[in-house]
Image (cartoon, rainbow, N blue to C red):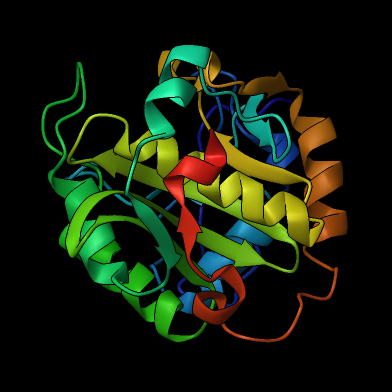
Length: 244
């Protein structure tokens, strides 16, 4: 018999999630509710292809949609016109130098058709805690000392789960995503999870993957050994012009 209500999570942070394959069809991907945003629970969720997404005043909701929006790390597309504009850019990309600023900028960025933000204060503090533990990372796009764009997400093994990005100057988020993909591809990481469909992401090369295919890659990549060292040093300085 099919299940018509989302699973209610146990209060224990390390309690297992139900299989992502058991998520509801309507609304697409809703799997569970409740629990908390502790590091243990968040890492268990991502490793199972699940992510939290809820608005202020809602219960904590957990999702695994089908199909899943993903980027192959070698498949992020920048238009020819945008690439030409980057050739003269002085912007520089770095990693994990201003994580809190990036996530707070993402929370403050208006989204078309969206009233308010799903990146609540509790969400910000949860991901800042994951960052302190070495699992959440940010890419900063800098014009001198000014933060003009960025992206943040969660890395487990050799899998990157994108959460949100922002632009404070035209093209800032595109450059952040392209720079992240460029570095991950060079490290041998195959995929960036982009979660749910978005026209902007589709134009940049995002693909619809059946959930089963996505979960197969996730289960393999989260078990892969991540190279040692912090992201700031490994990522280094990347010029936006080099992405052209």
